[in-house]
Image (cartoon, rainbow, N blue to C red; front, side, top):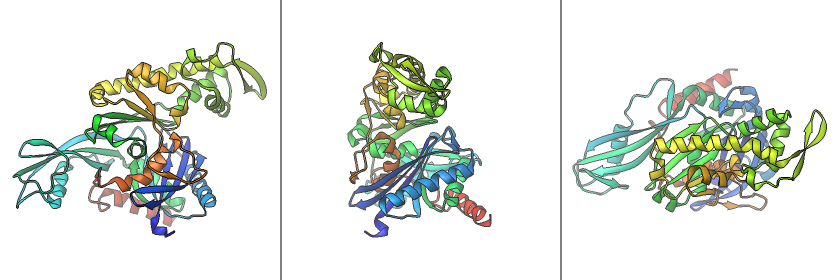
Length: 405
């Protein structure tokens, strides 16, 4: 196996660091291994302790290298958090020559992204969402078409420069080079959505530990992104407070016995919990009564977000839940009841899994990071001046800082 055929992704989340390594085979990826370690040093997707984050990243990389016998230095890193924002923009140019060329596409994208971005923010993605020639819209690939005026609509995703700097700094200190920084739900979408869902309209809801990311697709194009500052950790904290147990124990019983729908739990089923180093028994229904209100709050926030951006008109095929939070039993049923839309759990299905690698929604972002670059022919993403803009300066600044230490 050539090292050039290997690609790696690093999902740096609030509760876990997920490292994924795969081999490119044609138009797909053969996932060779996945390693997950607890994440320490992040809160709501943002680095709050560099040393702890570096240690967690190093542990994930070491684990996957020991597991697969493969080594890597360059990775695609996922980023999320409440600092991520998105907005639409528009550009237009005159067409010279016999038809639209690839250079015309680049020029109209440059025109569309020539908008004011505050100095404390960095452009992560500039994604074309549609073209028009001489007023005729709905065009996805205008190359070769005849006209005099080319217009483009794009969706621009930005993040906090400080948050990006800190994430890159942690990766550099952990001994890995970052090839790309990708907004995590975009990666998850590559792993779990079908082309038909993208065309007809769908919302993907990625429930992480500290945040829940929402993106909308319609006509094969990105329409909206947003981040809600509620995630799986809020469920865990509610359990810990109500039952007066440690966070670790609350997380254990949430994963093992939690249910988002009280009515689906037997009235007399009991579970054991550790409280003050002593075992005690509680009704499993009581645990569900703690979880359900928080789940309802989360999906009401999602519903409010969908209403605000005409999401119900866009997501005609429904909602795809993914991420670790989607593993909570009954959460898809509750989501359907609150949102009034069809809901399914999204698993990464566009890859080949080696023996021992399970298909699980907690891997959606990690696997999607491997797939993201392979799909650029369908879902083109332009970066501000390649890596010659602010993003390259951020990387160079981080490298200089790290190596001077």
